[in-house]
Image (cartoon, rainbow, N blue to C red; front, side):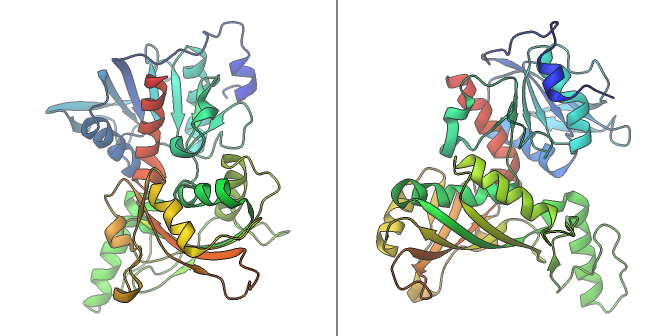
Length: 357
């Protein structure tokens, strides 16, 4: 077993955390999954200065070939010494893989950006959405965590409101797409929908319940003491950390819906100071990473179908919460691409900020 993060980063053999320089030797762990593939696409689309790119995966996927800048790269089997010589390592694997391999890569001087839940609450690892808290990158200790996809999407809308009027409480319900459970869940949604429409039986393989024309509580473990599942707990903790608001009250209900790609979130927020819907919309329109979609006359508000493939998070349906007549509560609706701002894009943007610093 690998040492815990604190032990690995305190090792006397550790190289000091590198300042990321261009061009960089880049590695992607979990390259064949949905997020890993998006990381490759983001590096190419955004013209990230890559000196060399190596792709790693498990034994099941090793040997496959993926395209990058017109070249077919062979996916390698991830081993103990695979990441030696890397300047930047993007992890798109599960938390166990990240815990095993990320500390060693950071100890050798690589900058690690991890998309799993392994280090998000670890005080030694920065948790970053660049548009919201890029200052957390200063003095990073080698490992930078990508937030939970819903936390990353929600915080882009919450941060401008928090800065202007102070957030006291957030009540949210998520509508999470198949992309959040990976490529196999996306395929299960397509296959089960086809079976449903043609009257054929379909037995779920990836998720616990029928997916086509159905929705169900997020499939993470439920804490018997609190009743909250793991996804809900992540969002609560990570929003508090991203906004530097440990006392902010957050309640979340996470639901998986039959949408292929892009999550949506309904939120009602209680503020320290009154804020009109008009002022909130003006703040959001100026916020980086946000695109306001708010047309009550046409009933056009954020939708997953329009958020899919888009870098910005869509925000709209901003209105006064009628249950809070004192004017300190607002309701809003957001939609964002889980594979992009909720995962791969945010990781690449973190690397871009490090290059610019």
